[in-house]
Image (cartoon, rainbow, N blue to C red; front, side):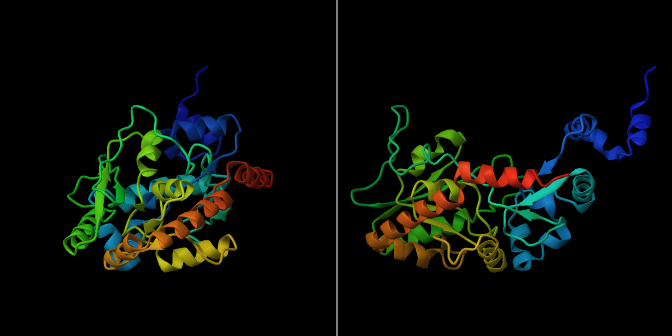
Length: 294
C-alpha cells in the first residue's frame, strides 16, 4: 500500500517543508548525517539583521537585494536549523542565525594554485604597457544581479587606477569575467596585484586563490569579522591588504610604487595559504569534527 508523502513525513516527525529539498529528505530517510556549510549572507542571516552591517552599505550595493526577503530566508534557515547535525562557519562570525562550529575547512589544491604554474597554450598573455604594474579584478555577477549594482565595488577600483594613471604611475587594470573557475588561476598568476572586493566584509574564492598563488591581495574586511577570524584560528595577523571604497587608491598606490612591498606580501600570502588552506590538514580537522557527531 502506498502511503501519501505527507503522512510518511509526519510519521517520521519531519517538517513538511523539507519536501521542497529532496536532498535533505533522502539523507533523513537513509539515516545520513547532514553537515551544513553556509555559503552566503542569505544562507545564515535574516535580511533585517544583515542590512545593519556598515549602515546598510552591503545590502545597498547588492544586485539581488530586491529578490531577497526574510519570508523565504527564514523558511530555509529554519529547515537547516532543524535538520542539520552540524553547521560549520567560515570563522568570520561568532553567531548568525545558527550556532556555528568553526574549524579550518576551506581548502585549495596548493599544487594547482602555485606561484610557479605555467600558462597552457590556449591561455592568452595579458597585455600591458612596458614596465606597467598589472592590477587584476574579476567578477562573476552575471547571475547575481537584477539591479544595476556591484557588490564588489568595481567602479571604485576603476576610478582609483584611473587616478593613478593620470598622476603618471605606470599601472593597468584588467577586469576579468566569463572565465571558468578552473582556468582563472592562469589569469591571476599574470597579475602583480589582485583586488577581491571592497564592500562585503569578508573574502571569497578570489582571495583564497590569490593567496595560494602568492599574490598581494586587496580585500575589505569588516573589523569584527576579522578579529573573530584571528581569534578563532589563533592568528596574530593576516597578509591581506585591507581597503574599502575610501582607501583603495591609497593602498593601490603603496603597492604600485614598491616592488619590495609586493614581493614581501606575496611571500607571506603563500605561507598563509599553506597554513590555512592545506587540504590534508583541513580534512583531518573535519574528520575529527565528524567523529564527535552522535
